[in-house]
Image 1 (cartoon, rainbow, N blue to C red):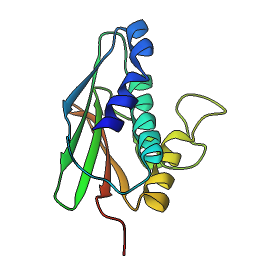
Image 2 (image 1 turned 135 degrees about the vertical axis):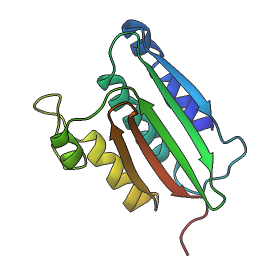
Image 3 (image 1 turned 30 degrees about the vertical axis):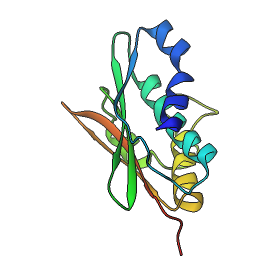
Image 4 (image 1 turned 90 degrees about the horizontal axis):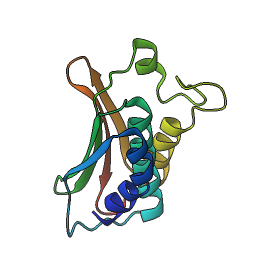
Length: 143
């Protein structure tokens, strides 16, 4: 919960300039996570950054956390829908719909989640439903 709030605060100024709201829909107060909080925050920041860059003036972004018992699910939703090519390549290193010199955000999210947090990153992007990126991480460290 604390890491989500810290990540959201990083985007206060950027959202103000684009008239975009980030709404914390659900938090996980008191949930204990044994992973590195800086890595968790980095993944969440990348999810928020992607959502902000895909959004247009007046849009809103939602972020939340779900306690699944032995794991936590942190998710970020935005209204935009990814194109077919982006869906296929979103986790590829150096793939970007935003131009040259980009393309490490989603790739980095996946690497950090899988290699260092013991979790997974996934997404769903559908017309009429928008795009949701999810980070699923275990609460306890791997044995």
